[in-house]
Length: 197
Image (cartoon, rainbow, N blue to C red; front, side, top):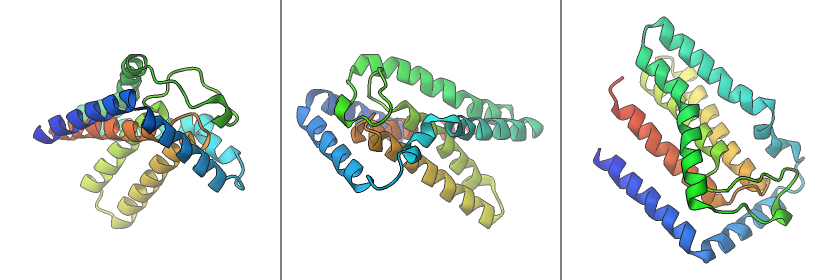
């Protein structure tokens, strides 16, 4: 519990610093410009993958398969945890975004899509980190087959990082929005893992 309190405190302080320090936003903008320049030769459909049907599938597949697996084993709490992640992350975003009121990166940095909601935290990054972090946790803890375990963990980590990178690449989120989402997602995972399941 002590670690969770420390991490929540870190998240609150991090959020306050982002809110009151304009130098952070300037640094964020320079990172976006640098990443976009670095990746300009790659096709723009790549960072758009988390904005299409693939992203919905990447949420639905682990939700459905995880729920079915745990329900068959009559592990109701684990099934409930998996199913609650999208709802909990959505509710957190509904609270945090209007509260912090951070505007998106400038229009000229946004590529292809131009969202109108607030920027902090990245909802794509938050739900991906929480859901795939839970998958990593369960596979690491319970999977006996080392090849399957480490393959799933590696693919999950890659997807988490790719979704975060895609938000910055498209210029729809600042890097600090993504990092804030990862910290918040980690807090959720700590909460879920501390409940004995």
